[in-house]
Amino acid sequence: MRGKRERDRFAWAWAGMKAAVKEEAHLRFHLAAAVVVFAAGWVVGLSRWEWIVLLMAVGAVIALELVNTAIERAVDLATGEFHPLAKAAKDIAAAAVLSAAGFAVVIGILLFWPHLR
Image (cartoon, rainbow, N blue to C red; front, side, top):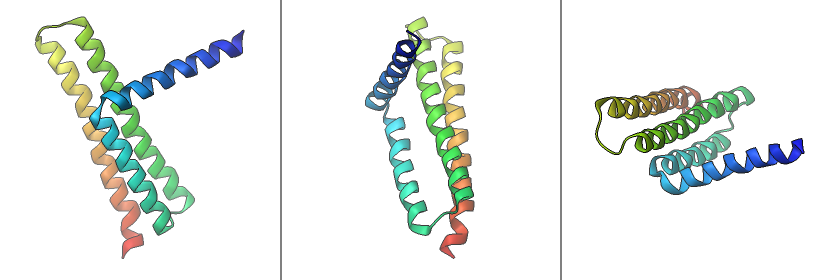
């Protein structure tokens, strides 16, 4: 029985990922950027540790984009009208994604720069 519950949890998480990819343009952008960055990493021959850092940076952006989407959905469910706290919650969640994406760009520059000189 435990195995079925674990499969169900994985299926629910996968359904959430599919829904987010289908409905969120920003997530699709981040995933496309990840594909490009991973291809570039393969071309320049990143080391194992460089790959680890790159995967962590990309993973953080994707994970935060998913959390941002969940927060936006929950806020929209809680209130159908404008409220300053609802706006703040959504804006702060979006700022977390922006922050992670900015750091990911800096990490990417630091990782790729030595390979491009």
